[in-house]
Amino acid sequence: MQPPQPPSRQSRSTVVTFLGAVVRPLGSWMPIAGTVDLLTQAGLDAPSVRTAVHRLKGNGWLQSEAREGARGYALTTTALETLAAGDEVIWHARTPADVTDGWCIVHFGVPESMRAKRHQLRAHLSSLGFGNVGTALWIAPARMRTAAERAVTELGLEAHTAIFVGEYHGTQDLTGLLYGSWDLTAIDDGYRDFVAVHGPVADRAERDRPDPARAFTTYLSVLDQWRRLPFRDPGLPAEVLAPEWHGPQATEVFERLVVALEEPALRHARAHWPS
Image (cartoon, rainbow, N blue to C red; front, side, top):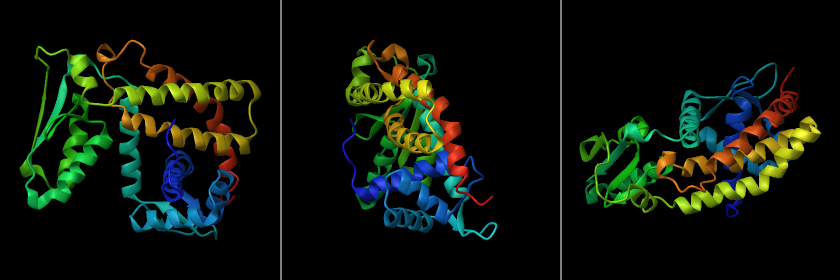
C-alpha cells in the first residue's frame, strides 16, 4: 500500500486527478461552488480544496472564467498539455514496450554551478519512468526519447546532455541489469496491493451498479490511487520482467472499474455544473 500523504499533497493530487478525469470530459471548465461540493464529498475539506485550486491557478493551470452566471475556472493550455503528457506516460506504463525497439539512454554532465538543475533533471527523468543504470546515466524504453528530450529542453540543459537510442548487446543478463536500475519489486508490490484492495471493489461495482454519488467518490479515489502506479512503472518489455509481474492483472482490475464507474460518476459531477 502507498504510505499516507500529507493533507496538502493529498489535496493537490486529488484535485489534479479531478481536473483530468472530470473537468476535461465536461468541457475543461469547472464551477467553483460545484467543485468544492464534489471534492468535499470525496473526502477533502473546503479550505484544502480552495488552497489547492489557488496554487494551481498560480502555477498557470487555471484561469478565472464565469459561465452562465457561475464563477469558475477554465483549464489553461499548460494544464491541458501537462495532463495529456501524463496520459501518455500512464498509457506507456500500462502497455509493455517492444524489446526490439531498443532503449533510450540519457547521459548528462551538468556542472556544479548548475546543481539545482541537475537535481531537477534527475527528478524529472525518474518521474518519467527512467531508471538509474549508472553515474549520470539513465535508461528507459526507446519510446521515451521524446519525453526525455522535452525534459532536457525545458531545463535548458541541451548543451550538457546526450541522448542515445539503440539495442542492448552486453553480456550481463538484461533482466538483472534492469532490476538493479529500478525498484521493480516495490512497483510490483504496488500493483499486487491494488489488485487485492480494488479487485473486490470492481466485483461489487459490476454486480450492484452503485448510485452516481457513490460511483463518483469511488471513481475519483480509484483514479487517484491508480495513477501513482504507472508513473513509477517504466513499462518494460514482458520478456525482461519476472513471470509473476502483477501489472497486467492490476490493469485489468482498473479497466473494469473505469467501465463500471466512469459514466455514473460523470453524470453525478455534471449535475453540479450550471444547466
